[in-house]
Image 1 (cartoon, rainbow, N blue to C red):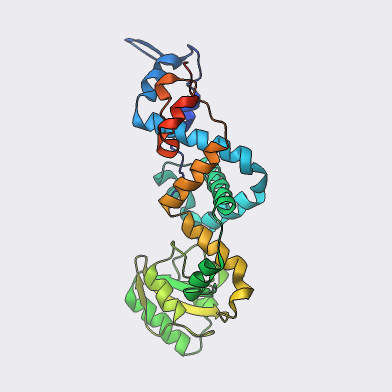
Image 2: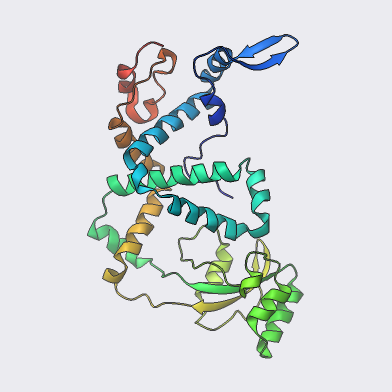
Length: 297
């Protein structure tokens, strides 16, 4: 699973422990380690400074856009990931050093950032026309995933003989998230980055109701794909909302755009760095001017 943008490091929680105080973090045969000692050590590291930077950005985003990101929106994105990985969901989380709670937090942070992008990155008519040229409406397909090419060929032969795709998916597919849904997966378009590119290319070539007559080799194995719903492209003005979403999603992957947006957000955030040793922590966004708003610890 790709960590969502601005993936706040797992040590962020540890950093919050570093509030002023002398509580003991750990004890050893050589003595104890206090929060003050831990804080002093952590703040001198690049990871420590990065975490503080991310925490500041998140606090400011929450203040400015928190009312625009609902629990329902977070749940929707969370469930998309959960459905995508099926029974492997918890294993995927663990392999990325995440928990269900930390994933939800990262999703919220990502949605907050997207609201900032939408607010600060205005879209022109020329932007919409450019995006329209590559626009592909979301399609819905069903798929049967197997490990062997010979199995996929056998499935295709049975389809040619009139067998039901949904029943074959339930019998043969190794994809636990879709096999009991007739092989049906969530609608996607050309901007989808989670599906295998060979899978997408093969799917987009299909007419509605048709299936691939040869196994499609992907990173996951061999797949047989059936096109369930393939909407016509239609007129540009009917898809303005979708086109804007596509542009904003592209912006979310563009570091230069994100830097500009976060800079604007921080300038509105009245940020003051109290620790003189960390006065330059926001220089990546605000330049050396950020140190002018700092004071000694």
